[in-house]
Length: 115
Image (cartoon, rainbow, N blue to C red):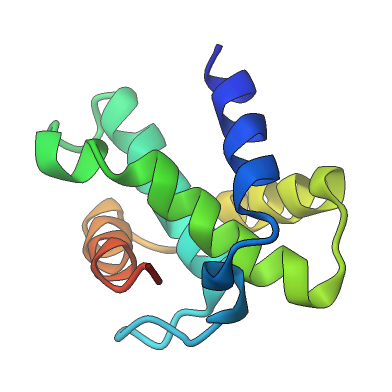
C-alpha cells in the first residue's frame, strides 16, 4: 500500500514547480541525500532504533518524495533508477552515519522541503 502511495505521489509531483528547486538543505545535503536521510530516519524509527516522533513521521512521505523528485526530474532519471539511487544512498548513510545524526539531518531536510 505504501509503495502505491509513493508511486502516486511521484507521478503527481514529477511536473510540479517544487521539482525545479534543487537547493541543498541547511545541512548542505542535496536532494538525493535528503530523500535518503528522511527514508533512513523513518526506517530507524520503524525498527525501534530511534524513538517515535509523530510530527516528523507525519511529514516523511511528502518530504522524501519532493526531494527525490528534485533529484530525479532535472536529471531525467527514471522512477526505477531514482528509487535504486535512493536505496543505495540510504544504505550507505545507515552504514556510516549515526542514527542521531541521520535524524537531525533528516529533520533539517524536512524543514527545508520546497513547497
